[in-house]
Amino acid sequence: MGESRLIIDEKKIKYSGLISTKGLYRCAKEFLEENDYDPYESRNEEEVYEDGKQIILVIDGEKKLSDFAKINWQSKFIFEKLQESLVDKDGKKHKMHKGSVLVETNVFLTTDYDKSFEQNAFQYFLRTMIDKFVFKSYLNRSIDTARKHYARYEEKLKAYLNMEAFK
Image (cartoon, rainbow, N blue to C red; front, side):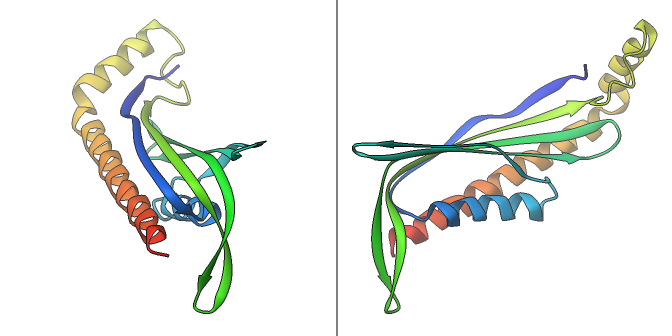
């Protein structure tokens, strides 16, 4: 199997207050679509407790940089103690939730994801040498790109959640 390098290790965003769960989900998914990560929902669970409901939502995505490397993205949204509340906005009632959310994100860079360099020992050796000497600057640029995308993703989610605080 190809090598997978951890670029972003469980970066966390925490927020408590009024939350539009659909809006936050849409914000994250739109960002990933705009940056060609082909997002999909790999997990969606909802549990109801006495003090509110808990929703766990995982959005995965991958962006193929070349035939050799791709970026894998995973964001896990954990909504806790959600209670429905009606908010008056521009004379209209909107359904929102009051509670907290934790967003954990992991980003990986995977090389040789289709295992084309693992047919025999020589090809594996060749892949290691290519990684180390030929594609080193290319992979470093890819890692920098993924870090910049995460920084913009974090800014966008924080800005969205901050807007929710003033509704």
